[in-house]
View (cartoon, rainbow, N blue to C red):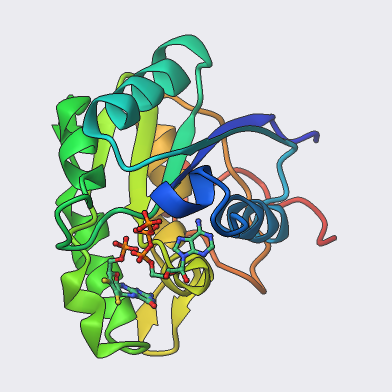
Length: 193
Ligand SMILES: Nc1ncnc2c1ncn2[C@@H]1O[C@H](COP(=O)(O)OP(=O)(O)OP(=O)(O)O)[C@@H](O)[C@H]1O
Ligand SMILES: Nc1nc2c(c(=O)[nH]1)N[C@H]1C(S)=C(S)[C@@H](COP(=O)(O)O)O[C@H]1N2
C-alpha cells in the first residue's frame, strides 16, 4: 500500500535569519526531522520571514488556504520579547485552538531548559490544517516534536489530529516517534523501512 503524500508548510520566523545576519537553521532542522519521522512522501512549502504579526498571519493564511498544506509548523518568535508575535499571529488565523500542544511542549521542554516556560507557543486549526508553533532555537524542534523519556513528543498526537480534521493518513517511523491512534482508527501497518 502506498502512503498518501502530505503537504507541510514550514515557516522560520526570525528577523536576523530572514535578513541574512545569520544563516537560517530553522527550515533545515524542520525538514530533517520530518523526513526522519514520516514514511509518507512529503511536499514541503518553506517560508523564511521576519517577526511581523501581519506578515506572519498572511503567510499562514496563504499556506493553508492557497497552498493547501495539511500541517504547518512554525519556529521562532514565541518568547516574551516585544518582537515575539508568532502566537498572536497564529491566533489571528485560528478557527479553533488546540491548547494541549502548547501545554505538552512546555512540559517536554522543561526537561531540557528551565526557560521552557518563556515560550508562549500555541496550536490551532484553520480549515483542514493544523498549525503548530515551535520555539526558535533550532535544537528545540526535535526536542518538542520527539520528546523526552519522561514526556512524550507532541508529534505522537499529530497524525490522529490530522485524521480527525480530514487530512492524509500519516505514518511515522516508530524509532523516531510512535504515533498514537485508537485501535478503531488504525490501518494495517506497512512493512518496516
Ligand atoms: N532561524 C534560526 N536560525 C538559526 N538560529 C536561530 C534561528 N532562530 C533562533 N536561532 C538561535 O536561537 C537563539 C535564540 O533565539 P531568539 O528567540 O533570540 O531568535 P529570534 O527571535 O529568531 O531572533 P531574531 O531576533 O533575529 O528574530 C538565537 O540567538 C539564535 O542563536
Ligand atoms: N525544547 C526547548 N524549548 C525551549 C527552548 C529550548 O532551547 N528548547 N528555549 C526556550 C527559550 S530560552 C525561549 S526564550 C522560548 C521562546 O523562544 P523563541 O522566542 O525563539 O520562540 O522558548 C523556550 N523553549
